[in-house]
Image (cartoon, rainbow, N blue to C red; front, side, top):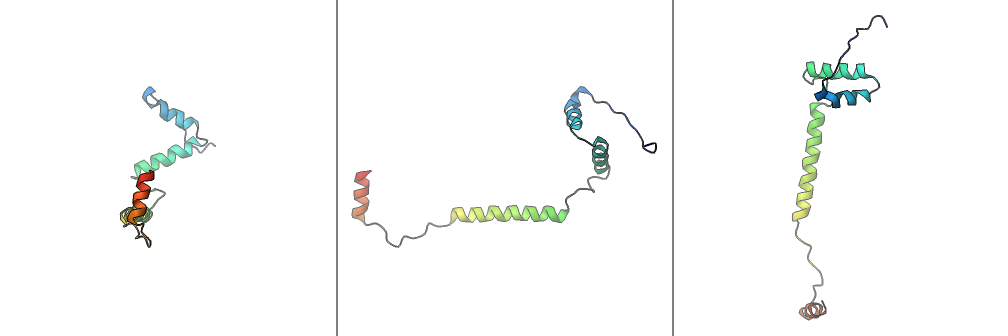
Length: 94
């Protein structure tokens, strides 16, 4: 343990939510180290690649396109449409 660098930090009142969040994390040193490293490197150590993001976006767009096509499809034609007489009878009943 003698080889470790130590640092004590404090939080302003405006960052109380950050302090409370860190309280719930078991390995605070590792969490903070990874967060600062990602910040310094501009997010280059992100756990998701550009290709993975592209695939996810493509899947979402495809899903939305399929949903839109389903919504605008014409209603299927009826094989046995009801007669005018049946329509009038239904109209009178309801």
